[in-house]
Amino acid sequence: MEAENSRVIAISGASGFVGVHLTRALQHEGWRVVALSRQDFTGSATVLAERLQGAGGVINLAGATILGRWTPAYKKTLVESRIGVTRRLVEAMAAMPVPERPELFLSTSAVGYYAAGRCHTEENHIPADDFLGHLTRDWEREAWGAKALGIRTIVFRLGVVLGSDGGALKQMLPPFRLGLGGTIGSGAQAFPWIHLDDLVTAYLAAMANPTWEGAYNLTAPEPTTNAGLTRALGAALSRPTCFSVPEFILRLRFGEGASVLTHGQEVIPKRLLEAGFQFTYPTIDQAVRQCIGAVTK
Image (cartoon, rainbow, N blue to C red; front, top):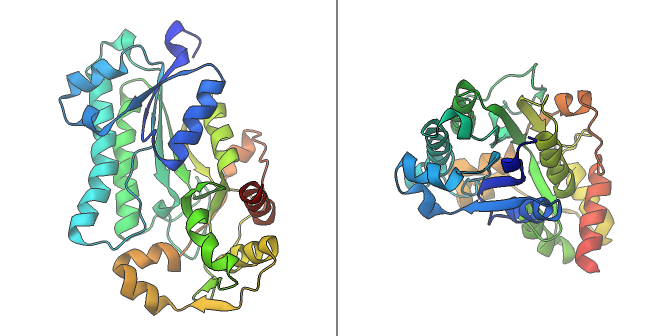
């Protein structure tokens, strides 16, 4: 991405937890960020294409939160915010003259792509055969449409993003601070995760390295479980973690959506490691300590 327009990036989902931090990092590196709003996706592909004019790349972070009660209406929201937005971005790029198209399309997916209860790499895995698995596969299928246009396409399959000022950790901390934290169910389910700083660094590396292409697991290299996360939070906060939340309570609250909390996949970032990517926070203890420390400063 060495052309003049290589310093302009369009981002969907720029106002979200990850999007805000990634935008800040890109601007610090001298990029001009074009933040795409919901309104940008209500018109035709031609109108959206005008918003992408001059951008050397497009980063797709859009997607409604997956944690919730998956009613038929909310499932529709999950589908539209992922599959619909991605489809519109690809259609907009297709509507652009070939020389003016972005050079890079970096789209988001999730580790929900993989079946629970197993260890997965990008090359050796079993796809999940449930709502979330089908959602992520369809989501990715739309993203690969950019590759057919001759655009370098990357899909990052994200684990749970841990940061000090938002995301999942912000919701977990209150009960743990009160000494009321604990495992979900047995706690034996895998907990695929990544520290926000490593996530941002990976996005910047993907943009800078033209050899990166295809699907990458964006998870920490040292897997853990829900019990491992619980122990790390208790140690960082110096609080007991003797409580547990029975799975049936979560099913009453979230219905089918409770599977996000009660099931997990062990996911290894094989392709990132092979590319020489260096994680600043490879273990859950390091990541949680940093996040807690940042909150209490």
